[in-house]
Amino acid sequence: MCTLVHMAFLMLLAAIAAEVGGTTAMKFSHGFSRLWPSVLTLAGYGVSFWLLAQTLKTMSVGTAYAIWAGLGTAAIVAIGILFLGEGMTVPKAVGIGLIIVGVVVLNLGGAH
Image (cartoon, rainbow, N blue to C red):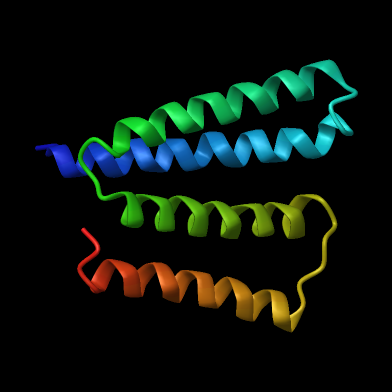
């Protein structure tokens, strides 16, 4: 059975995916000088913000935004490393780890 909380988390994950897709497309838009990557960027962000707004009807803004920003950042870093030739450094790995720990602490700290 899918509860309202589960639906909120599913919408939040979809919002993150749309934002990550939009950010990745932005890389290929070359400063919005290429039409289709630019269109995908705007569509990705539009869908992401709409889904995030729907999520905020049932989830606290602090929790939703921390998860949205943290997972989105980690996903973009992973895409950069795996597909765009960006390197992984110790400071980058530590930063991602701190973001993840921060999201977990916010959730455990009763930010619901």
